[in-house]
Image (cartoon, rainbow, N blue to C red; front, side, top):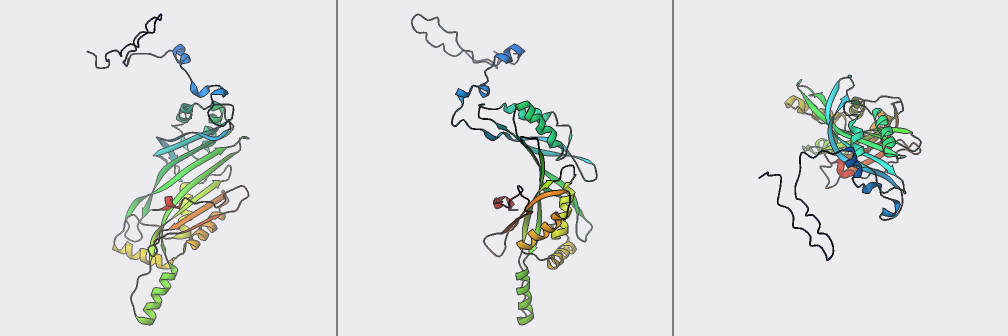
Length: 330
């Protein structure tokens, strides 16, 4: 017997005077072919009438799908292509007169671009297609991926790959004004200046050996790129490295560990210092229209973390209202 077929389900008893209904078949036919006419006959609950809307008849600002993954091509600062696993979130707006959207079109439209090289600028083209295909007035798209950079050890000459959490984000408003963003996470070490001074005080006044406390820390940069400008992931990494100096290391031999201790001694920083140093770097880059910086120092002295948030202060831009500090734990 074919393993794809099962016995028929019991027929539902007919009431008096009715023709008995044919029993339903519990079967899957792998040879069944869908015709255009058959597809047109399928019910479509998402395109139901206004009367079928449940709840308040109000517009929805974002509706779509989040978390579909595929490999995409990205361009490095050296104009080389790299293929990275990417998680995609695509949403559009829905007016109050429609029950729902065709969710599959979010993915189908995106797949039309799957062989392109993705930059923040390309998101505008995808979003215009979203608005066209789904009849929406607004659309948003976000690509999350881990970006590898080969980083040298401080003194040993070894090299290893550091991975950076990155997201490209685009938004298209009712008037088709496109805004493009890059989000970038940078992990560094923060040695406490107060602890360093107190340790030296004990050494100088009482000849007592002590170790200043330092901790793994993270900065999350969110930048809006100026229209028509190109800003690479490597550019944001350089801003962070130049501002903070003390990036965590991949390969470490004894000479590298000693160098890292010296580096932390040369560049101690409070969380307030880190935020201001990054502000100075981003504010000096003409390609960046607006930005927000969130820093978290995962204290080794305290049972809590030290955090700071700062923004450029552009009207209608980032408002320094970041509160998701749990996601800065590293």
